[in-house]
Structure formats: structure tokens, C-alpha cells
Length: 219
Length: 219
DNA sequence: AAATATTTTTAGGCAAGTCTAAAATTTATT
DNA sequence: AATAAATTTTAGACTTGCCTAAAAATATTT
Image (cartoon, rainbow over all chains, first blue to last red; front, side, top):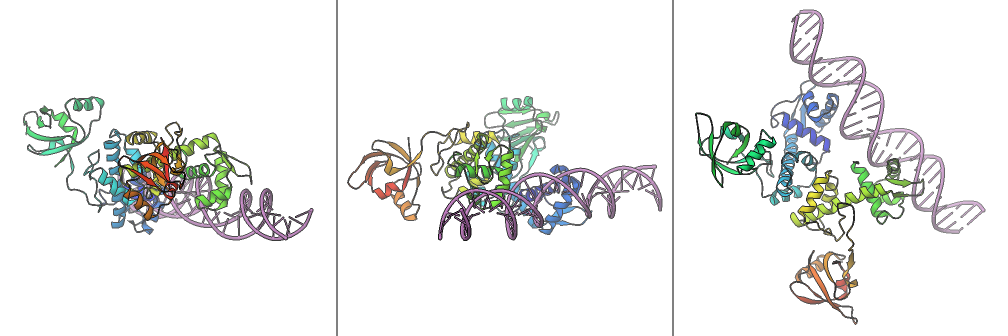
């Protein structure tokens, strides 16, 4: 099965808007996300419905069928793998890669995707900390959380920031925290909610503000 | 300037058919190459002409303008860089990469192309031995020749075969000749046109038939 | 519950790119 | 030079995906 770029984009949008294909999505929500008009969305939804990629009842919104979900997940897998490639291999910053990955995700070749996956050593998450589905469309269980929610003793790795100001990034850099940095939460201080964490190089205490702005994956 | 995929494909086809944009190309030749109908080609040619990418006179064929040539070369650069990536980094065979590169060549991002070029260490030729234009659209001077045309003393590297039968490829493999293999022509025998060549590993004599079927680039 | 506002759908149109069939032009052949 | 053959162009139609404007359905206020 091969679909047009547009069909793929609609399915991906619906997938994201429906919380992994679970709930129903309104025409307007799709239009907003794809920067198109509601009438265009209605047109396309009818086509998707004919192709059995979504279930549609007039005025009631849509939801993905299993095969629609499958297509969406395949696109997401490609998008995230390409993002890893751009950041890890071509030294792009993690905030530069989205638009390029948006194009690369439509390249058709299963062999290419699998080879890329292998080349990147089967990454479990993209540079934004979002999980990468495997070849069979399965997501690894771990999920992105804010560092301040992590219990003492846990080992995790840094996958993203909320505050992406130059100031904050510089602060992290100075302290040896970067994308992919492994860290262990040594202890948490009840009083001011600060945390002591240990990286490969050193141990340090960070403020609640810092911990609130760091995304990590628990190993 | 950004063009549709279709426009890019037409320009690339015309470039190849016109011997690097030099001579005029007929409607039918383009149709044959793009597996489309002559009438479709006429339609598109008019649009390309409106955009000043080709010069067109009814019934007289087309040729590329400078800006048409520029666009074509940019696509060719991308195509060939991606081919190198697929072969060198993702371990594709050189005869598997064309269709995938055909898709990748349309990805739009100058930064991506330049980073890829750097990542691949500025390759001068693709896996088929065709030269890769640089960032400014300039081709490196060296060109692909048949090994039997190379003078004694010259150092070159293998970039392709004419006979791509399994038998021939196996023979080359057995003798340590592969894509990218450096070799020096030690001497040429007038009598039977055989050649003695030296690779990193060993020195051997090859028949005229073999030398006739190997493409090399002279360093 | 009626009136109003919002959302969604329909109807009709447009641009890109393709097609077939027929007409125009050029090229080759007798 | 006239005719036949091949090439190229025109004319008209189709699909995909988008649009605007108006109508229909649903949701929200009063």
C-alpha cells in the first residue's frame, strides 16, 4: 500500500490529535493543524473513508482504523529516525530538524528505513524525547517525563528541554548536560524541591526550576 | 527559487538528454525518458518556458537556459550525494540506490545537502563513477574512463563496470577489485593489450576484456 | 425552547499534471 | 515535388487537492 503525501499527512495529523488513534477528531482540529480549510478536510476525509483508513460519520468527526493507524505509525517512525540522523550524524540542532524530517518522512523504501534504523543503532527516542516505533510499529514502553517527577535512585537520560532559551541551554552546557546525557537522581530535597544528580563526570545539585525544564526518559 | 517535483524531473531529463545542457532536445526524447506522453511534455515545456528555464520554439525542441541548468545541476548534486550515502553508510549495493535517490533528490534544504556533503567527506564521484558537482555547481575536472584507455604509470580508482554480470563481478571480487579500489597501471602489453596493474594488496595482469569493462577515474 | 453562534458540509471553481484523439508541422521516401 | 510517415501540438477531459461562499447541522446562550 502506498499513499500520497497528502494522505500521509492527514493520517499523521489525525493520529496525533486523537491521542495515538484512540479518540475522535473534529474537522476543524485537522484543518487547524494542517493549515488548511475545513471544507478541504471534509473532502479528504471522504477519500480516507473510501480507502478504509478512517471511520467517518457526517458531523461526528473521524477516527483511524487499524490500517490508518498503521500508516500513521510508519510515517512517525520515519520522521523520528530521520530526526535522529540529522542531529546525531549531521550535527543539526534539535530545533532545526522538524521541517526537514517532515519531508524525509515521505520517502518510500522499507529497506531504507530499516538500514537507517540499524545505522543509528536502533535508537529508542528521537531528539525531542519522543519514542520511535520499531519495525513492527511497536513503541518501547518508556516515556518522556519532567526530571522533577523522577524518584531518587532512578537512572534516566536527558531527551529535551521545555525552556529552550539560550540562557538555559548555556547553563546546561556548562554543567555537562546535553541531549543523551545519562544521569542518576541521587536524592531529592523536600525543603526547596532541589535535586542532586550524578552524571558521568560529576555530581551536582540543581534547582526545582532547572528540573522542571528538563525532559528525561527513565531507563 | 523552488520548483515542483515534476519541474525538477523535466529539467534533469533535459539536462541529461542534451549532453550537459548543450544541445537541443526533442519532445519525444523527453517523453520517452520520463515515461510520459509527448502531449504532456509539450504542456510542461510551455510552463518551463514561461518560467525562463528553457528556450522553446514550436516544433524545434528545447534547450536549457542558464537558470534551468543551475536547477538541474543542483538536483544532480543531491541525487549523487544521496547515492554515496546509501552505498557508503547504509551498505546498499550500487545498483539498488537509484530509485531511492530519485526520491531523496527532491528534499529541499541547502543546509542538509551541505552537511551531507561534509559528512561524506566531500566525495568527488558517486558509486557509478559520475562526478558530483560542488556547492557552486562546478564539476571536478576528472572524468570516468575505461581502464583500457589509461596510460601506464597512471593512478586511478575503480568506479564502475560495463559488464555487470555476476560472473564478472565475482571475478573482480576474487582479485580484490571493488568499487573505490585504488590501482596503478604498471605496464601495458602491446601484443595482446593486457595490462599489469597494482592494487594495495597485490600486482596482477588483466586481460583486455577485463580492462574494457572497468570504469575508473584518473586521480 | 428559541435565537444565536459555531462547526461542518455542499456546491462550484481553480491549478497542476496527466491522458486520448485529432490536427498541424516537419522529415523521409518514392 | 508529391506523398507517406513520423513528430509535435492543440483541444478537451480527468484526478488530486485546494479554495470561497452558501447551506445544513450541531452547540451554546439567553
